Image 1 (spheres, rainbow, N blue to C red):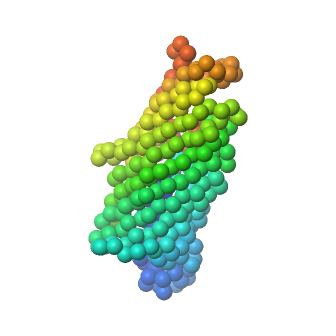
Image 2 (image 1 turned 90 degrees about the horizontal axis):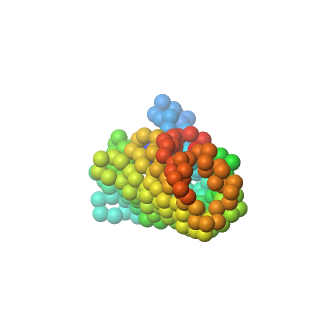
Image 3 (image 1 turned 45 degrees about the vertical axis):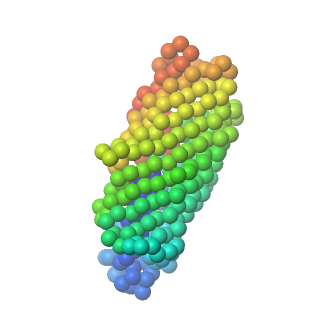
Length: 255
């Protein structure tokens, strides 16, 4: 997600160059290719600062390529706002991007998205996940021109959660960040089969996050699940403890 936001800010800020060439990326590519940075490769030739699309972006931690579209929405005091949309297999999302005239920062706000997990590759090797991920309240602050992420947050809810076709209840996660450049995502899952809780922590700009997870048998856990957990986690009574680093830059599955 961090890489996604950095690419986004670069796309919109870099498109200011396009104004010098009749407003379209294709013109700039044809007559001044040396002015088109490498990160601009996914941008359509017809894109302008006011509207356009970048195709095939792979946000950090995502298993699928995403198409990003933007359209100028309105002016505000000392700045302007763009409507953003993201589309990918199993993913749809929207947000607003606020760019002040000072051009020293950018703010992503009012973000929301839906993910159909069944349309994505498995997060865990040999495990099929299903259900709907609903993302709400997504917001982020970026410093410009260095395009560094300063803050990020979102609320995520997993409904109709299933593992290998087995209903497991409802999951929730809240993503928080601090002024020191770190982020933290406590999460929980409750159902009749398992109860799970833990955190995922990392730092902006670093691909590796730390997973701390506790899984408990709620009384209905299949024996084959227990045996699988015994192979990858430390068992404590009727619970299993998992602590490991996750490289979010890798292809899924991550576990």
